[in-house]
Length: 236
Image 1 (tube, rainbow, N blue to C red):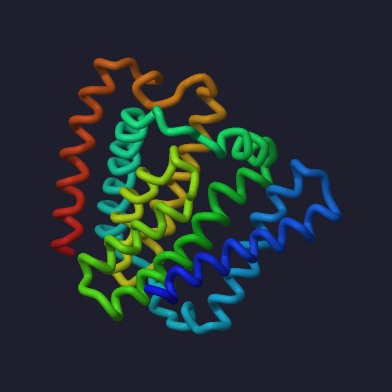
Image 2: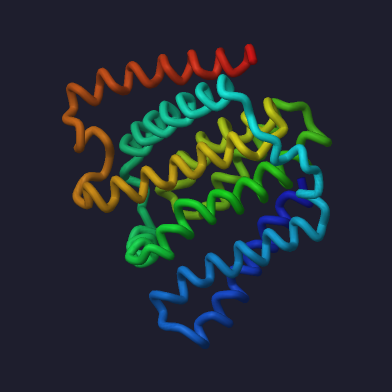
């Protein structure tokens, strides 16, 4: 557990140091994006150096059936997390302006939608979840991994949904021992977030986009789909 927390603290330290250096060579708006990319690259290199990513099996592909049910589970989990987030809309979104600044460029979108998810899966599943599974039973390890993942986001508006999605991501790693399913779901989540933010800038959740009656039926369907998808994944 201490090692897992230490890795997160190291990542925060790398972000802080990268931010100071990057600020010397770029404007504030560009510096945020460059800081994320530089910090992610350094952290990935550190994880490789420490041996957390040395096992090639972490990157083994998944078969079509696993891919199909993983995507369905991911999409339904994302929809359900949005519903929970809308119920907790009293929580402040401290990162709203920061994300808006980052997403103002294609490089920023790439950092949030692709690079960030890959690095976070390498850190939280490839290193932290793997480490926790060595010392705790699977249920506790997955819970602790998701808890650390949720707290890592710091932003009150994101912590709960990050924890809930982290449960699925950690379980997918435990189930497959591969980072590929988690990376796919994580990229899907962040990419959809970026897409809907740009397409529906005034909407705060899917209910405002779909209308409340269609949203209710969609939510009921996705809850059932999530349960069914996870059951199917268990059988594979």
